[in-house]
Length: 307
Ligand SMILES: [Zn+2]
Image (cartoon, rainbow, N blue to C red; front, side, top):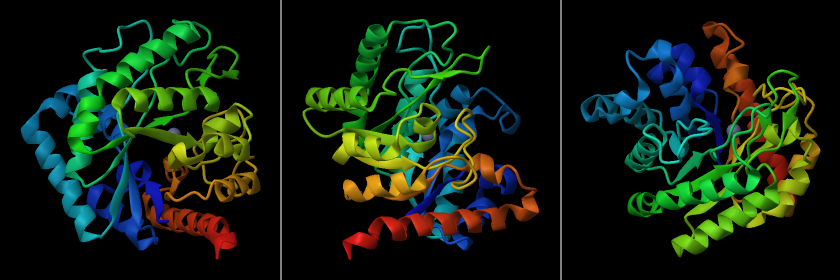
């Protein structure tokens, strides 16, 4: 089990080379490369991210920078986060979503990474729901089925993340497509049947569970061996803060109990870029050191009863 962290905060503050060096120096062994962070931050991009992703020359140059730093600092790229977006009231194979996800799968293979995290397609606003749950289920099934040939070609597994949606007026959060872990299981099993092999697994986001009041131990036990990767982060129970564990209200003992119960074999990955974002760049390396210590603690706790 490697300790791993999402790259967003460190790279945003320090750039690719110094950001990955700080991650390595903090003690992390692996990274969760956030393509979502790179390509949605307009201030860091001259042009639209779709145009960027589709420009072979520029994307090759950009990825050469990442690959060089990853190799220099001996960091494993264990998971990539696709630059997914919500697509309410639009056909699923939109001109934005599908090509960026397919390009991300290609880039995943180029970086030696075997797992890509992709959000289901849903309306993020509970105030204006665009589709019924049944429609969302079948649209998502169609969408994820359509990327199976690319997953197989590039030897990448798609990890589907449990999401939530929010009423932006009242700030109340609600479940949405595949927030329910039994529904997520059903979708993963159905998609793997369609693929004829295991192309799909789960990315369990602990912060999203907390917002929806779902016990992490329960969710882990229900998902079982479908679990491929983790998004570990904390919040105040209402907002998707993506802060460090123990800075919010999650019951981390229940998280560890669940990981032990399913004999989790994957990495301990923190998705805590917003915690890193709290600090001036001079303190970013120290914020990463605290995150690394927390990830190590969780790893020790998870593995403790197995020895
Ligand atoms: Zn997440």
